[in-house]
Length: 171
Image (cartoon, rainbow, N blue to C red; front, top):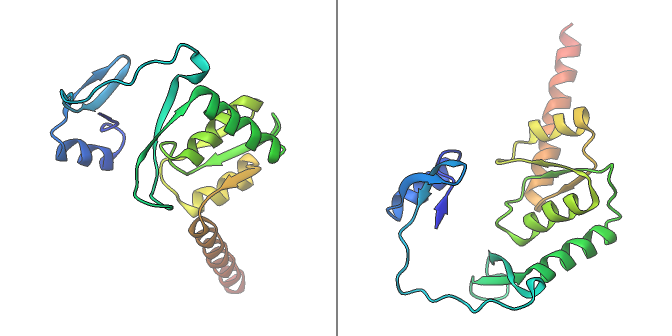
């Protein structure tokens, strides 16, 4: 396992818990490198590059026990292109991604945005004030999130509107 320990305190914590050692992987610095599992066996590689495994996504267990799911290049590209068409995404879209790209929705959003030539804004941690600023200043056109994403944005907007009314009355 590799951990982005240099940019994420959560990843650094996970790296410490599993005894990963700090190191470099290619051009990447401050990476936690977990020990190789000597008991693991490799999956046979498919002859077709389209059918070879592109990603291993871990599910939350919505329909059962959490598990790893192997997606081929073909699976991933089909999912991304179909969803981009369904959403009518275009090159002038600006997509704000706060969902983790280790989740199928996050990685699909990233891939579909790149497939149509649109702009992607990856965000490491959700902040409703930063989102409101990005919508206003950067022209974000697409936001995907869980219900709490939208609820916190609405709460932030209500508080911001209330604060500006109070400031206007004091002036």
